[in-house]
Image (cartoon, rainbow, N blue to C red; front, side, top):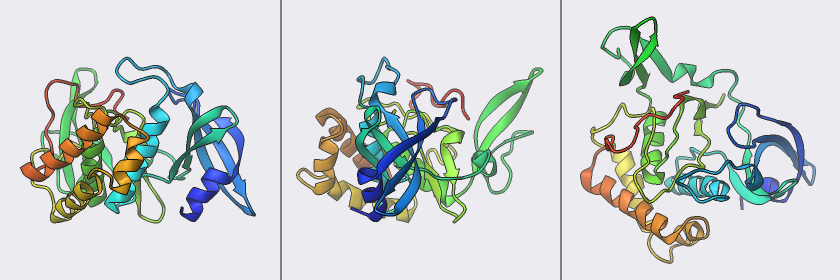
Length: 264
């Protein structure tokens, strides 16, 4: 257990407020233990809004599972996330990343015309009012590209712009992973710019390692089996195998809306 995991798991949680715009209960807290403290987010299971396509009461477990897979890649794209009891019962507790106001602004843009421009990847055209459209683009950023691979593995159904947090130290984090790991294709994301393009050598190396870590009785597979269903774990293995066999970033399936709403 890392020092921050120990702090988040064993520390005393003090609720400071609620993040009002969140669809589920999201509480901003301070956690303290043996002279150390940090800010964190606490999402109690009791505050989860029921979804028609996900079982009730297990979004927090999926957030923990996303963190475990992120750590297994070595990319560290998800803030440290634990499951524990809190003031309102069991929930997910995640290290708070302070990215300032509108952190996605440097990663997403709307541009005039039909070309993304140098350093950007096109996603889709969007209505911007008064009958006008603009091209939604995201940065051609290796950090985003790694996150696109992670999202494909965990089958992220809600990769919005506001879920991208560039930290002051240059690292990029993704948050809000409750709607993940479904056994059916649910991938909805703003990071389609590499769709159909070859995976990087780095991504292929990471996916090969991840495939081994997902083998039956491997530590990662054992930990994930406590958080998601057997069918969902099998689907994770299948997605990793498909990425490796195709060698390319996935394309929208056409059977499910490919971009989340609202996109930011």
